[in-house]
Structure formats: structure tokens, C-alpha cells
Image (cartoon, rainbow over all chains, first blue to last red; front, side, top):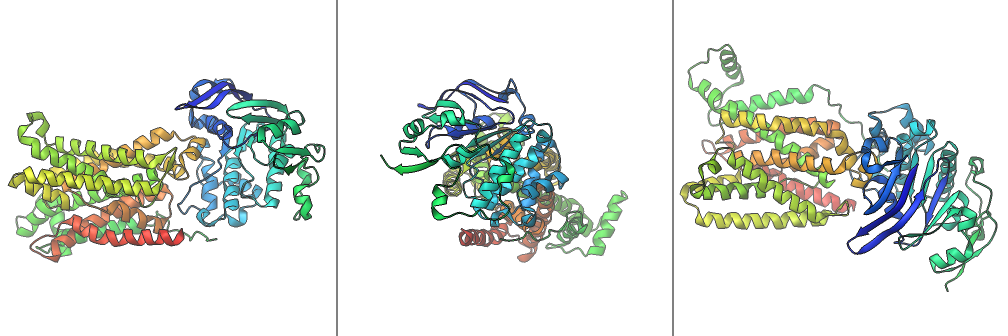
Length: 280
Length: 343
């Protein structure tokens, strides 16, 4: 369980995070929402250990993460960042194998093959990652995270952090990813997602953390936080609830073929409770 | 989409065998040619403790052996220096020469040579020059890295431009030193700016070997973290790599290896760019093969290039830095063009 207590991050004169207290819970999908610059990605940087808080503490199972070795933390916490910058000719399989580094395991293994399979990458396994599209690359890094968390998943623990995971993904893979996230959470993994798309958030989240200018505006169960008034205020847009919240996402929701949709179903798809009315 | 071609496995005996053949060729090349069979005889006699007293024996044993040995070590050091720099900058265009490491080291060494007369005894110790070169290289590399690294991301343009600036500045300062240098110092500094293996002996070879070996081992130990570092610092950290420690070790190793070579043999450019690149083309980008294969290719390339220097205008010699630059510059331009085409 990752636990933030009164975390402040100050860079120069900018208060990037200001008194953030939150936690990830096993078996729960936590989604962070907020406008650009609200401090969402800073939370990811703190979870990776890349940043340390100016004050307050970030703990993994009651131990401050600064006291853990990076390898120990990496055995239980995987992060898929928004951008990747690999410009060398590694194959897809090579990159997924890197997920086994914290477990001191090198080379091909069953776990790697399973991760490739789960992200539908088996066919692309020997392709150069540099030659893939943005969405395909994103799936490679997700597969690497799955390989990294294989043991944690079996034990029903671990934390998967995703920064904007649906960006660059086509509709089918967005749906598939959301279903996979739900499966992971049902296995007991904590999932922490930074998202922009409100409708995705409403469908996938168990808990929502709404952030604005480095502070948590409100956090709690999805239906309590994602109210039209609160969202309109934070995002500076008038938003209307179109339908009620759908029951929790189940893996069998994923259609075997391409989802059927009509133009209006793209913006007003069933189970998507929000739509945009107009700019204020 | 492009599939990865099957790579040559490193455990093929080809590379070590080629290494021995290239050393043999380099030993026989020069103003005084020594045929291969003759060479085997001399080496066998020396091995049995009864070295011959003919000219061929003394040329081979007292001149060429240490020169080829030094060349092999220097080539391996420069190639691995390039491998470290490219992992640190996450870019195949990074090179100790282009990044200002070599010129920083040369400037520091030249400054110490010029001021040797007015310095206390301890500062002109034979090891003072390599040590000063190391500090000079460390300073310029640190500077280029700090400027081109913004928030954990390397900006390639800044990296190359900063390298140009540092090289220009060091070149100018070496020019100033030339103005105040006396004749002997002038020869020393000129020798540095072109590079040559002509002035090394058995002691330099042994010294370089002892100094480089720990660095070779350290680079080998960093092979996995280097692979992970290639996809970015945040990414490597999330997989459990001590990013800051790895970066510090990479800077330290490359500065150590390249500065030592520069201090003893002058500026030999482009080995750190060309060798790792060719190795990647043959064996793939993984450092598990890149490190040992670059080491062997470097140890193969520099003695051969040196053999060429000794033969082309024999009995005079070409500076080896000139030869590597002649080969390396077109290669670098080719890489730039290819990168432009891809972008």
C-alpha cells in the first residue's frame, strides 16, 4: 500500500504539491483527475522514487520509500510513464524481459511470454520497438509492467501506476486495457491511474482523487467525487451527467470483436455518464 | 514495422580468433617487416627464455610488442569509453571526442606540461599527467552533461552544440599554451593533438593495463543497468536501477579510460563512436554483447590502424589520431544523415 501523508513538493518558488494525503488500496482502482499542472504526474514521480517530498512522507507498506532499495520497491511497484524514449534497436521481447530485472532474472521466460500474450504482442515479439506506432509501444511497456509484477499478482499485492495509459491507444485496446486493469485489481493489485478522459475514469475507478493546483480537492468513492458541480468547478467547463454510473467493469464486458458504435455513441456511449455541453 | 534480424551470437569463436590474427598482422607491419613464421619463431624463443639477438627479435620484442599491447588496451578503453558515453546520453552519436572529454583531458595535460617548471616536485610526478587529464575530462564531461540534461531527459542538440563549444574553447586554450611553450613542450603538445602510439614502452603498457582492467570489469558489471537506462532515467528508476549511482559510475569509467589513453598517447578520436556502432550493427544493442564485443573490436582496430600508420609513409609515421579521424568523420556524417532521414 502506497501512503502519502501531508506531502509537499516545492521546486524553486513553485508549490507543486501542497499537503497531499492519500493512499492506494489493494484490489482498488484509484484514478487521479485534474487539469494540466494540477500535480498528477508529480504523484507518479514520488511513487517511482524519482522525486523526494520537500516535507511529509511517502511510504510503501509503512516504510518510507527512501529507505527501501530501488530493486526491492521495483519488485512490487511497476510504473508505465507517459513517454518512453528508447531509440536503440531492441526487440519487443527484449523490452518486456527488462521487466524481470528487479527479480534478477535474465532472458526469456514463461512470465515474459505470458505478458506478451496478455498485451497481444506475441506476433510482434521480434519486431524492433523503434519501428512500432505510439500505441503499440505503449502496449510493450504495459507488458513489461505485467512481467515486472508477475509475482506480486500471484500473491495478490503490488501496485501498478499508469500515467495516461489510454493515450495513443485505439478504441479496442483502450477497452482491453480497462478490462485488464479491472482483472488486476480483482487479483488484489492496487492500481493507480492518472487519466484525462472523464468517461474512462467514471467506468473504471473505484475511488477518485480530484486534484487542483497541487491540492486534493476531494477524494472518495467515484459517485461521490464525480459530481457535475465539482467537476465543472475544477475543469472550468459546464458538464452534464448523461446517465447513471454503470456497475463495476467486468472483464466479460470486453467484446470479442470491434465494439459497435454510432457517431453519437462515441460521445454519449452507454455507461458514459458525462458529456460536454458548451464552454462557459 | 521492422523485424530484428537474427544477430551473430558472441560465443562464436570468430571474434577472439580475429583478435589474435589482427595482433599478428600489426606485429608484422611497419618499416621493418617481420614475416609471420619468423614472428612465431621469435616469440617462441622469447617464451622459452632464450630471445634471439638479431634485429627482427629486438624490433619485435622491445618495440612492437609493447606498442601493439598498448594499442589494444587503448582501443578497448576508447571503445568502452564510447559505450559508456552512449549509454549515459542514451544516444549513439555520443563520443568522448565530440563531447569534449578528450580535449578537456588534453588541455589539462598540456597545461601541466607547460607549467611543470614552476611547480613543486610532486606535481611533475609521472602519474600527475594522467591524473590531471582525468580531472580535465571529468570537468568537461560533467559540464556537457549538466547543460544537455533537463529534467531527466537528454536534449541531443544541446549535447552536440555544447560538445562543439567545449572543444572550441579547449582548442583555443591549447593554442594559447602553444604561444608560451618552449620547443620541447611544443613537440609534446603537438604530439597530443594528433595522437601517436610511437612513444609508449613496456612500462606505459603495463601501467595502462593495470589502470584499465578494473574499469573494464566495472563496465561489464553495469551491462544490465545500462540497458535499462537507454529507455530513460524515470523508466530505469521504476525498474529498480540506482540511476544516480549508475550515471556517476558511467561518467567516472569513461573519463578514467579515455583520459588515461589521452594522457599517454594523445587525442585519438572517433574510436568511441565507430566501434560501438559497428558492434551494434553486428551484435545488436544489448550491452551484454555490446560490452565484450566493443572491447574486442576496439582492441583489434587500434593496433591495425597503428600498423597502417607505420607502413603508409615508412620509414616516417602518420599520427594515428589523423588516421582514425579520416576514417571516423565520414562515418559520423553518415550517421547524422541517416538520423535525419529517419526523423
